[in-house]
Image (cartoon, rainbow, N blue to C red):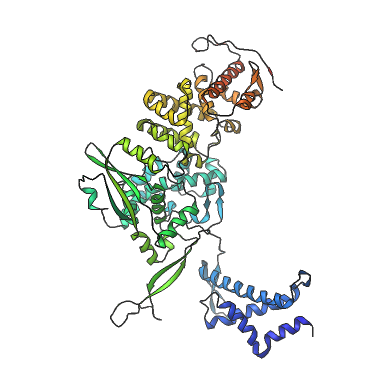
Length: 610
């Protein structure tokens, strides 16, 4: 008898006593295995041991005894995975006749796919984020009132950019994914980008309101909000459910024009917040400012927007918990149940409670145990409520409370822009040209949430109309608030519309990026005064790869870039835009003309650069 046979025979001696003990030791690590399941585990182990004779390789430096112990552990784990998968999997049940003509029931299990399987890594979108839940975007969009959509759905569509709106409307008409891509002539990536925009919290929460008002009873936040107060601030707290309802009813607004967008947090950070809530960890205050306008009390959420929108989104099944969340086992109490399903009472008639552990990874709100759902909805968020604030007070508070937070330069400078102009900029930012799916530019969804698109628009208006006063972004916002008019922004809107028609190539996308867009918007503003067909500007952009090497006044555009340490210094910006303008005019073989501002410009010959 060789060594392998000897070891296996020893395991099976005395009716397999040693083997069973090894199996039971490993099974005890999992729990939830009843006596009736033991034979299944023993059978799996026996099968794997038989295969181990052939798979063992002594050259790996491990003895057969150690190898066989590993096989036993692996077999138990494999059988446990199989049993759990069978419990969790969806299945299709059917009946068919056996060889004797008897009807037997047959289950066909549907293969599991991880909820964290990524489908759009750039935007952090995974399968779990698009699965139907208690709030199903597809179902909500399909709801109609007679031949008309509900007010909420119409409002939702109005807030979407052009391409995502088209996708949403086709979904409403019952078209499937492949049909939509074919009809709109878009790629899989573009479809996913559209769907990602459709599922952004700021958009889909418009649809929450109608749903939540049906299922939630009427509740006011706090009687304090309905009474006149003298103090500058009050400390209080509101439940998550109450905050969610007030946000959806717009009694509490988180969309102050000076605020940065929601969606700043990645899925991991959002999941960690939910875990802290369910574990009862302490939370920092959110800040609400009260503004009185024409006798109307308006309440603005100015600090804590990312937290509150994350909580509201999770409450509506807006995302599933990341598989990487650190504290995923949540301990909670639930009534003890007897063998027939009744709650057990003590001698005084009170329900006997017991502790359970819930693994929250990959779960949405509706998949939490009812006890944890109640804990989440009832959790109190501390609030600092500031009363009777002016617009200036609110702007200062937004900056003050974000002073030590990761608020980028574009978001900070934005606070200085006059509110009416800020609204115009936000309207421009929703144009198709600035959307990720537009082929003629290279912007991403992150550029929007980070405030980069706002910055591009503001700087472009400055280069177009006030280039001699160009400065850093913060002071540009101050300058425009004092010197600009609505027409500066409406004219820029018109320029963007024209560019949308001609910029539909990869070459234009290379130029309209977050770094250089403001230069090209400013250049097109000057081009628009030349009375030349817009498509000629597209030609210039398409040829710019070679034109950037040509020298004007002894320097090429590449030479200017090499000399520049800063891309936003006033002298450099003016030098770049003037060089681009001369190069453009030479490209069109012009020396100024009637009706243009170029009559006195002298154009220099150019030579090819090295």
